[in-house]
Amino acid sequence: MNILVAGGVGFLGSNFCKLLLGKGHKVWALDNLITSSVSNLEAIKNDSNFSFLQVDVIKPDFIGQLSQVKFDAIYHLASPASPPWYQKYPIETLEVNSIGTKNLLELARRDGAKFIYASTSEVYGDPSVHPQPETYWGNVNSFGPRSCYDEAKRYGEAMCYTYLTKYNVDVRLVRIFNTYGPNMDPDDGRVVSNFVTQALRGNKMTIYGDGSQTRSFCYVDDLIRGFYLMMEKPVTGEIINLGNPGEFTMLELAQKVQTLLGKQLEIVHEPLPQDDPKQRRPDIGKAERLLGWKPEIDLDQGLAATIEYFSNKI
Ligand SMILES: NC(=O)c1ccc[n+]([C@@H]2O[C@H](COP(=O)([O-])OP(=O)(O)OC[C@H]3O[C@@H](n4cnc5c(N)ncnc54)[C@H](O)[C@@H]3O)[C@@H](O)[C@H]2O)c1
Image (cartoon, rainbow, N blue to C red; front, side, top):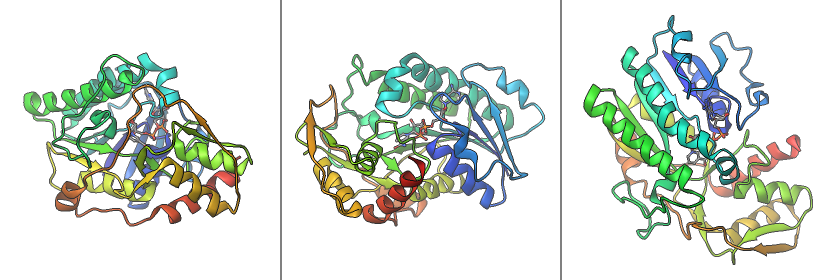
């Protein structure tokens, strides 16, 4: 099949392109490299089924560049994703999830392609329902430091809904919960990269607040297996949470990293960022039911692989 991955050079995108190529598909990665580097393509750049186009999906002219190809599936993963990145590029984040989503949906409409949108657990905001099922509408601040991301994704979801109902485009939405693993940017400011790089460098480990807030961490191989099933299974018009329901406090995560590295490091506490969710854990009942998917890699295994990747990188 011909598959387009917008944001294909990023952390999730590059891992997913590799999986698609391994299954024999032809893959086009589109990326403007705003938050990533082509070094992520090292393992796949010479694959004859792989093409990379450096384009900005906010600008619709990229569609003309693809007039010779008819796509079977389009994955929209293009967006700054970590708080430091989307706060550095707030307008770009709003635009890539609104205008960029519309442009890519137009391409899906042209080709009759399946369209898979990478939404996020951030649409649940600071949730008052725990764990979060897809039916929960969220508790989001529309006017704050996280709103450029959270509301952009909510708008992107609404755009998908509209293309489904107005133009019958085959949309499928994934709400991704914190995912980690090789090809993450060591300096992206996400908690796993922060802890691992701080520990590898022998620095103090930074915890925001008292460290009792929780997150659930999914290893990238599990996540992209779910991505693939989103295209294969009959889930048109469905929104599906993908994440690992194992829930850990930040203090527990910091301890795990130290244990795996055999290091004891000083922990420094910094103020909790505004609107930081206190807890996060996916309800994955729908993914189990509709995709037959659940994560297989536990946090210790996944962290060990991530530590190995970062040790070589930094
Ligand atoms: N990693 C996670 O834990 C997580 C959680 C929830 C949602 N997501 C979503 O999954 C997707 C991928 O996330 P990631 O972790 O791989 O982030 P990433 O920053 O590593 O990758 C995103 C990619 O999109 C590209 N991009 C951004 N704007 C673009 C534009 N206008 N045109 C073309 N390319 C553009 C970036 O250069 C980058 O390569 C994002 O949409 C993100 O919001 C990720």
